[in-house]
Length: 340
Image (cartoon, rainbow, N blue to C red; front, side, top):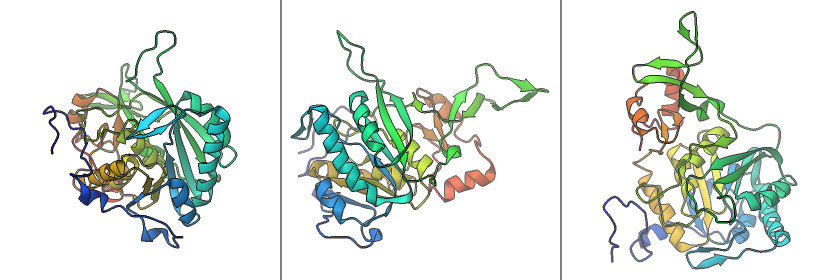
């Protein structure tokens, strides 16, 4: 039976009974896989700790990990219970040890966490990889606290396996309005003048304040309790991978990493143990065949939050050279001309 929702509520909450065809697209991996190409672009239904040892060594170009934070949280009936720091450290070390052999020598890994688990994850991560940075991103949603500061930030640790790794700076620049335009001999310096306003494409920092948490009126939203936004994952994928690379997520959830990888012309692979979440991931992947849009990523650039009007008016404004623009269309398979 279909659920009754408000007209503007786009939350994906298809039940297993309603979406059996999507669940049937998932695969299981119970024996060693010799060639990663035989299972790419798939969702693996299973326990990540059982599946990881079956995957081929040095087969992933980029790993994005969003593990359960050390919080008591219900995931569709399965509850992760907050534990002692020493136990969460052992848990973290267990999945990192299983992931390290899978990453290519030139690969990168990003690990999501809240402020408490960040202290543990950052420390353990350094035992397996070369830490490059800690990204902090702003959550504009969250509950206030009566006797503490509201928790409005989360971290993402960025690490690599070696000193030889991919980082595409031009692919992750942010378009911002120029408040005080500076000119040299009457010519704009480091900014562009358009009929709709003055803009500068700036280098990204390790503080991201342009992320919107998925909510009920966004097409990407699902009923998963800790879903990351497509825009956030797109920044990681564009910066640290190239077209046709393999992007891997061992705690896939409702499929955001795989969906964004597909939209950006990469191969993907994810592991998820919950059938409901696997179903949503496959349903979103089907939608991504025809809808390549990523909210906040328009014309090959990331935009500030609450800039919808500017995104529409600047949709055809050439942000790059003709050569770069063609690369965006041809290699990444996407040039989003309509913002949402």
